[in-house]
Image (tube, rainbow, N blue to C red):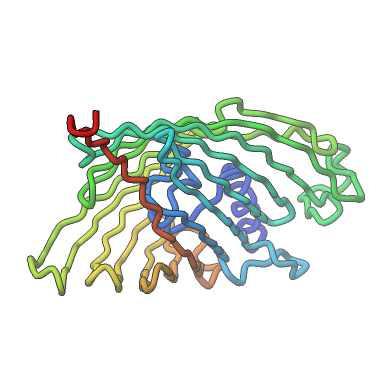
Length: 314
């Protein structure tokens, strides 16, 4: 039975390669959509870390639980109505690891007297994928494809496209396509490839109280992920008080339920979450933990001064 759990974990890992999974997806959408670069009107940086399926090991007691970390930074370029950003990614899946970097660019189009914004973005990435063949446990020994006694690696360049619509402090929706090239390479004797992914993110802010000094919002959100093999979605809802504290629940289809909580002070955002597995792997794990630490420094556009002319000085 334990081997079945391990094989299932590896299959899930293979289907998720090159794209990391986070319960707190709404805190830094640039990981999934380049159009969101510079959308906050601030220089923002953040670190996300996730230990998934804690306690999962193979028959030799090696830890095989997925570990994901992402550092991101992005900022607006008001002079050219744009935004730029950078994501540094590390994702370890059993005996496979992915280390990569992605550059994002977005062009922002103000709408409705700058109360709304349409953004179009492109991201260029390169992933270094490494597989420790010498640690793989196979059902049948001596497989010539896997008979390698050292880690092997390969590079996978790719690019993403995205579009986003944002209504100031009210509503947002974004659509992106990742890994459009579906790059592939041989690692050892095995072909490894990126899977093309489609992402849809959306949230809506519902005001509960009118008191500006003690504002209260309910923020439902949805995150849909799809590729050629399957579709998965996350449903979340958070209660936010005074733009300073928030807490909520999240559900990932046939995988997990999660509780989240965080705070915002002096530009810093900190959030933590715990996932309780409810899928087929739940007997073999102790759940998943995740943290996010970020900081945003507001950047205001330069005010254009209109020249004043007086006929007295002609």
